[in-house]
Image (cartoon, rainbow, N blue to C red):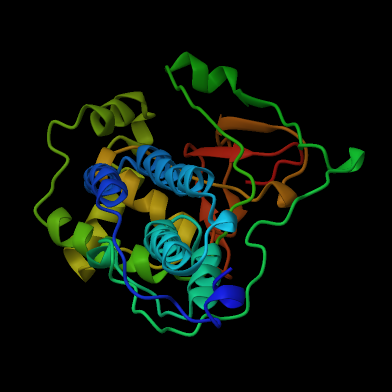
Length: 299
């Protein structure tokens, strides 16, 4: 509608105080969730802002308005999209980029999550549908897998959980996530895992050969203390590495398309070669280490 009724330019600035104040409260909640690395709760809160924008459209019915009234509503909605783009950048970077291109703006940061900052007169980009409707065919149904824990692992109290994540936008690097990591790494330099119940529980369950080995979370924290930062692998791995250091949990991910059959958590009975995620060279998982293997025995 901006293209049609505003000559393709962002209309004059306008702030709907009630709408802005309500959503700024939601933005503050999002910031608190992000500070605590409660990413799932942050995303839920972001969707509440998206829903508020949709409700605003239904309430104002811009298709019935003209002149200044129409321009004011369109500005509020465009400004809301700008803020939504900033908030979504860490979760859906490609969608965020498309929103920015359509609004004719550059990537923003969290300091820009305030209303009425969208510059009037900005020429918008080519408009397109952000989310295409997907028609699923019978053969495209969700891949089913079974996940189990070997009897040997069960005997020493190993417990594990898994989830299948779909429709992820994984990039080699995400600018918003990098900024988030930098802040986290500064704080993590003072962190240690002394008396961390999760890390200690991992060590209690280990076989004697690996009692003194560092857990993955400890290794990641060691990287921060030694190199000053976590490795950059891809947006997905980088995100769960932050969660791992923050919580002490051991977290991993696998590409379902590269797995064959069902998965099993095991204690390796022999050395096994594997290619770590994000690497090109093979590494060796040693006998006695924990691993997840598929039906063909691939680590």
